[in-house]
Image (cartoon, rainbow, N blue to C red):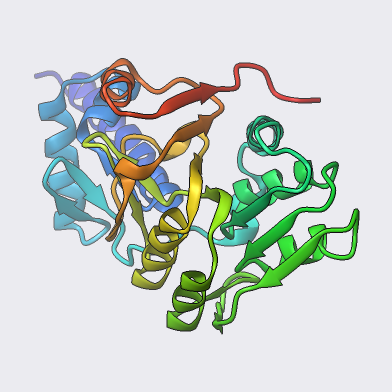
Length: 266
């Protein structure tokens, strides 16, 4: 192979490495299938790239993909700026399911905060949440009654987790639960980045009649370190872009309704 061809191949590989590492940093995990589709190269090429990066201790190789070295959720402030319009649209569609006077469990996170902002137009809601921002958004307005779940304050965002929060949910039964996602795999399964968060989200699904997963398109096709129980209980998934065909087919076989917002709300 000529020197210039070797140089071109090396440059393309470095481009893929940067793309893969950026994806791992933002999402926490990546799949070989998704990377192959988006980069337009074979799965074997992506598998070799991941092996190379794992050998450099820049990520951890797992079956079917890779995870970050720390396997932690991206910073909350950074997540607030990612796909803000898509999350706003998800929030409006989610809120359209909820009538005045309903009881609602709302998970913490940037997408669920978008749901809460849209719910500010409702009145006489009974809200249970572990998110301090959501508590302030919906409390003391329109006759709402808001309960902030007890628990341990997280170090990286304004919400609480832990067994106190999990156990307190056994006292409630709500009309709706709106739960976020760390990642949604093609099995399909719901994942999160900590045991505390995964336990709490699973209990939220248990405590409601209508169980709604709100997640933008970036969460599909990935895994994280902790599985959330109860995916089969989810009644709706609301997202801003239809998943890739393989994932779409899997979800279509589940007993749930996939709602896709095609156009952002202005």
